[in-house]
Amino acid sequence: MRKIICLVLLALVMVSLFGQGSEDWLWGDQKEEKQEAPIDDPDFIRVNYQRKDARLAMLFSMLVPGAGQYYADKSSWTTYLFPVLEVGMIAGIFVYSNRGDSKTKDFERYANGEEIQYTLGDGTVITTTRYDRSRQSRIENILMGLNAQDIYESSYFRLDQTNTQHFYEDIGKYPHYVFGWADWYYHFATDEAGAEMSPIWHPGGHDDNPGWIWSGNYPLWEDPSQGYFVTVPVENNNHASSRMREKYVEMRNDAKAEYAISRGFTFGLAFNHLAAGLDAVRLARNANKGVLSDSGLRFNYYAAMRDNVLTPTLGLNWKF
Image 1: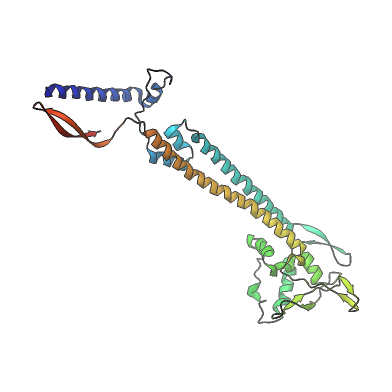
Image 2: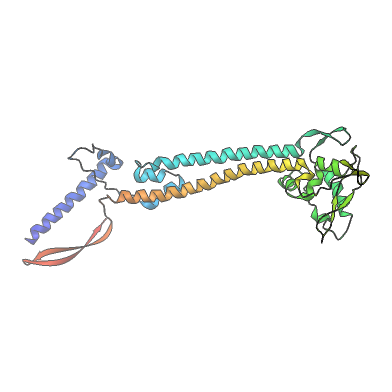
């Protein structure tokens, strides 16, 4: 009896192995196509014999979002979602980066890339750039000659002498580079006709640190109580001292906003790769729930007949 049972089991195993092996040899990669049949057919049972490697699916989608989904389950809607997001993120990076580049060229041209017609206090019109290093240098030399112990010394002024990225950043970011702007210089450092003048100082600041403010050299209105024309003291660390500088800072902020959006799309692109990889793992695991395949060692517990006695038996299977 035992021999008959063993022969039957061996025959079943051989048939199973031969059947699966012959199908792989005959149909190869087209095995899944052979399984296609109407789902509503009551005699049809869809069986998936191929396990999906979750690590491989994750690698595919981390490299190309959607590739791992296509490998694990190409019918999933996320198979097409992640590629669409990828294209959108890449397009956003390029669009907003280009817009930032365009606005950067605009504020650079605004500063010293074009000549304008500027009206002096006496009505004379001159042609100049909005920002000029020579005007900045003249005021720097005056300030550095006032007091050797003051903050105004050579290391405090380090404006690049060429049109570098640092130059365009410094003239808008730091108030001690305001002196090169035309509307500051021709209001505070010259007379009404644009002739260079020595500064007129005005006490200012806080009570415990009065300091001095460069007030300008031609009057804005007459003060009857004093009997003479006076000027309005304007601190150099606010936009009231140069409307050109104010406009320039606004233009630079607009450019930085475009670059910030571009960076946001960059982070979104990285997140899309990560999310696609994790989703591919999810799909691969779901696909493997219906897989009828096994690998490695497996212990089987069963009852066997030995000498006409039902005996508990431990078996070891190894599929290769």
